[in-house]
Length: 419
Image (cartoon, rainbow, N blue to C red; front, top):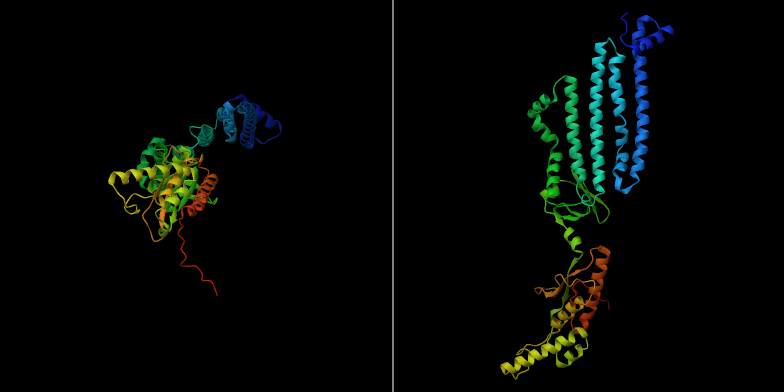
């Protein structure tokens, strides 16, 4: 029997001999016994280190300024960091446990190197996840596609890790293997097409600040309309207004026409662009009596007086004695209604007077003369916006009759009354 070269094996073998273990199998049993002891010690070291680190991280993580430690706990980074000492311990014990057995030492070192590579992969992935979660707490990064960048980092880590493991198994330098992958680049591009396109799209989206988390976007060609809730390497998730989730490939943000409503939210105002269709046969010139009646409206009194003065001055200048409204500038009921609309909008606190505000006529149509309200209300909240718009048009529609105007109604499909 070959004499053991270190004290650990000598003592363990002496212990086994005292138990009556046969000499023919003592080396195998001794090695198995020592491996079990080493693994148990490594496990205990890892358990103690893990508990200690978790307590330390928990204590620091309670402070808002040190929230990084809480993110480390959530991603089990403390557990992986606690493996560093046990891994070093196992590496130091391999030559001692398998003393005078070079083949077993080489085999176990091979397994150990593969395990260390896997450990480093897990550690780096956990670190990438931790940094992603940590940056989400920062206002400057809250709306950035951090998932995409984290996924790219993890793909690179996994790719390099797999190459390293293959190189370890084949006894080749990983650089040589990387060089040999050039011939397979077309295959990889086909397999990872969505990931590559998504990565490029994520960079374009981030650099050009096209889309952020929380943006309301509309992609008509894909029937997508809602708030962006997640941007990853390969997919974008949009929460529609009916609470359904629309999932699209990331590169669809680049390949399709997209409307982003962020500018509306940034200004704090949302546009109103809606028309009231006036029956054209109800439009007329107003008599003096009708004008006097309409002067009772505060919004119109000054305007009517000024227009009457302008008409009188025009008649005097041109020497016009014929007061027929077709011969002189005259005031119409549609003109006063339009002026009333814009003055009514100006006096409302929930309509912005700093942005475009106008009332205009569109081209006459078979369905009436569209009088369009073009303004911006001072909210972007959907429910409040609809309430304001409803209030505006309730008032304006109810005011139409005062101007002797009529709103166009399509009665061709009206069911006839039975006699």
